[in-house]
Image (cartoon, rainbow, N blue to C red; front, side, top):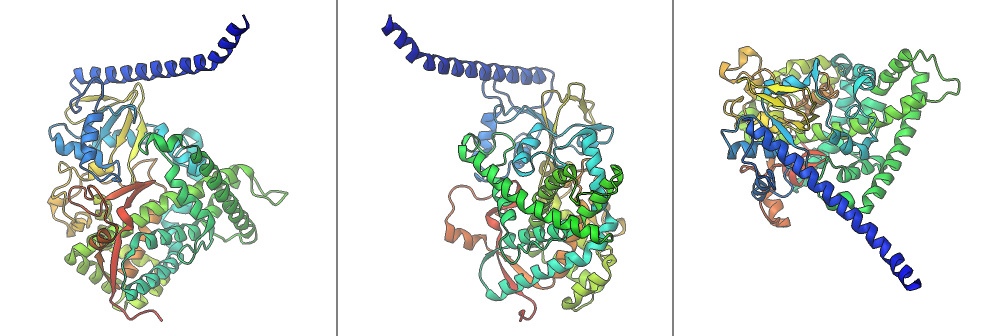
Amino acid sequence: MSLHLTSTAHSSPWTVLTGVVALLIVTFVGKAWRVRRYMRMLQKQGLPMPPHNILLGHLGLAASIQKNLPSDAHGHYLADQIRQRCPDLGPTFYLDLWPVSDPMLVVTDPDAIAQFCAPDHLLPKHPGVKRFMYPITGGYDLNCLEGETWKFWRKLFNPGFSAGHMQTLVPTIVDEVSTFRDDLLKRAWDGKIFSFEDHALSLAIDVIGRVALDTKLNIQGQPNPWISALLHQRQWAAFGLEMGIGMLINPMRYFHIWNNRRIMDKHINRDLDKRYTTSQENTKSKTIIDLALNAYKSEKTLAGNDRGELDAVFRKYALSQMKVFIFAGHDTTSTTICYSWLLLSRNPEAMSKIRAEHDAVLGPDQNKAAPVLSKNPALLNRLPYTLAVIKETLRIFPVVSSPRGGLDNFILTNSKGQRFPTANCLVWAVHHGLHHNPLWWPRVDEFIPERFLPDQGRPDELRPLKNAWRPFEVGPRACIGTELAMTELKIVLALTARDFDLKEAFLEWDQVHKPRGVKTVDGERAYQTQLGSAHPVDGFPVRLAARLHPVS
């Protein structure tokens, strides 16, 4: 009897483990069957999708596409690669990549995207957005919030990002861009190959620190602990399984997430407290956090805090917003700085036009451009060609997409009257696929800033279609930092375009690092890679030649 009991006791853990494994397998198979059957039902209704395999869905198609792309290419290339392989598919179609992703409704039709980004028909952000942002912000940022909570906090932070307020911040941004320009001059006179993105990224972070908290992070001068923690945190953020199951189950992932968040919170809380004390002493202070705090006090009818401390609720949300402002702001701005310079360097006629515009508006002496802009920020509104260059760069190299969660009663329709159910789907507005579709953009592969000039300066055939350009998205959930990003980008080009000649140095980089496998997307060596959002691959290696005398 004792032998029998001992045997049973020893076998129990294995029995439990076997039961758990069996349950997981049954659950997995059941989910797979439901997803595949749902996609087959949509297919039988005549709704567009690539050829579907009942066992693998569209995983085989995705794998065959991935074989011809660099291993680190950004996921937003997938939609346009499918368009090229299946030209009759149309701009809206279903895609079954389960278990890598929920079933997808891929949308690259501008009017269809407008249907679910409009104020009266707004699909919620997909849960994957919160999964992705949680390691970085804890889930209290504007990207993750929904409903009345989102409306309340968006309303509080809107004034700090308004066009009028951006005008008051121009001298501050000019100050940081001047440091960026001086650093590039030193690099130019050094004559060596270097990562242009490193400098652009540091600039973007320093600008956010100044305009949001009036804090000189000085990333352009030296490392900063909490920024290093934020940048390190990017590699542990995942929307789904796109980063690989190994990363998700890595036990060190959770330690790094906790430790990075601890470092970030410590330093941001210190800066928030400093900012709060300063704002109490100086009621004219106008940083983004100051404006939001004043609005919060007004909304909550808080005349003050007897203990002289920052309100705990405001602190929690402000902490998340600072992280997302740095995270999202540095991605979009630094990436677009890199690609603006790349495209201008490849198009001498466009470079000549932008330099001529800066001569005409800011004066022929580029050394005086910074004080001229600081004194008269409104001059930025007289740079239409500079703005057109930025917009065309964002068309060709958009940084983000817009993933939404489908709803049972939400149906998209296209111009042909086809109805696309969104239930059980990740509804993916793919900005790269939209911006590269020849249905909406004539001469789609060419860099033509003239598309975005005012009517009198633009050929009619190049007029952008309504809703077709949306790198920051459109509607209530559009990026809150759009005005800041565009202001900063115009200042960067205004203060640097006349100072340098840039030459991309991927060939030299490859000779040193000897990368393996495919290293181009549609022939483009400077493709976008995924690190949080889209970044130029390999840090955008370049050489600069100065068109000025060296900095003393």
